Amino acid sequence: MKKNDNINTYNALREKHPFIVYENFTFERGDKQLTIRFSFTMAGDIHFAPTLTIPLASFDNLPAEVNGLETLVFNIGMIELLSYWKAACPPQVIVKAGALNKKQIDWWKKLWYNGLGEFFYTNGIDAHPTKFVEIISESDQIFDRFHFTTTDEILVPVGGGKDSAVTLDLLKNDGMEVRPFVINPLPSAVGIIEEAGIDSGAIITVNRTIDPRLLLLNDEGYLNGHTPFSAMLAFVTLLAARLGNIQHIALSNESSANEPTIPGTKINHQYSKSWEFEKDFRDYVHAHISEDFDYFSFLRPLNELQIARLFARRPKFYGHFNSCNVGGRTDTWCTQCPKCLFTWIILSPFINQQKLISIFGHHLLDDESLKPTFDELTGLATEKPFECVGTTEEVNAALQRVIKSMAGMHLPALLRYYKQVMTPVERQIEHLLDDFNSQHFLNPTFEKLLRKNYR
Image 1: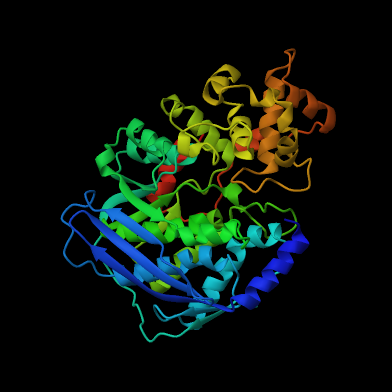
Image 2 (image 1 turned 180 degrees about the vertical axis):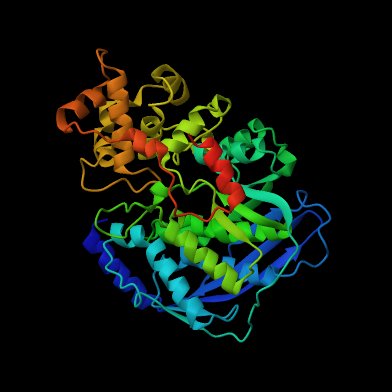
């Protein structure tokens, strides 16, 4: 669909569906699982009912009543609503499930706007940061902040990629009590957790279901695109942590996530992995949910090169990790997407080519069909890929280190091309590998542990 067509569709859908309502939420606790249901209604009598289910076997001595659940679930509904709002982008969002004050409404509008930056850009929508939607609170039900007694455990979300593997391994090897957390578990995530020496019974699992009505609307020509998954993850980790009485929630987002995908703008595929979101989220949680949560990214002081080096020192994970969004569900690398090529490049200074071939199936830097993606990753194109990839500086530093290490050897096709088109410069890879970004929320214990291990 052309961008002009998307704009026409956007305007027509907003006129056809002038509002969407967050009606309510329910949760039902059975013997084996907690089931949460949300109810959203879009003008035109379109109803959505997404669900979350949480098996309870991982929680010991869970009391009959857990305070704060209403507050947590209400806020999860606000981020779940975004996936359904974007189908038609109704001008009004009416919240009946709970009350929001002005500061909360402003906070949610900022998250929605920045989290949908890629969606607006790829659909050619010129959305105003404060006027793209009006959020109206129509409830007197205020969900107050709460307190709870916490344990020394650390909740670590594991997605199956190299970053969470590093976080999990560093924390566990230091003797800390780690509880892995997964949403809709992939084989790579389970494999990493088990390889780290953690029993699968300790995994806190959330199963998230998208209402099939949304998929049908997409097939009918309604709008679709990227939403800030990591923001949804953030709110759901709070619920898991509350059920387990866990204070610390250790993400694996790096400093590289702060770089915009479109240079010169704030459009960032990884906005909800950025330090800006992390700071905003912590502030929101402490002001409106609970001061007892400590949500932070353990790897925030590091860049992608440093994390790749840490991962390379852990060969036990080579056969388990998978960062490919295309092949992840089948535990394969598609070898054609930006994530596959970036992962190869960023690991290449630290893992030899033959080992990388055994991981991916063939030599990605010898695949000339990947040249357009290669240009996007290196900065030769005007835009980075809309994927969770590192900075162009990190990519170029990795490539130049590999070329230097292969002096006098036959270079694969994309490296030969790179030498022809890229002006040789010193990318200061040593500086990148020694850097420790001060923009983070690690407490002294976590910072000391990371400083001890990152070089």
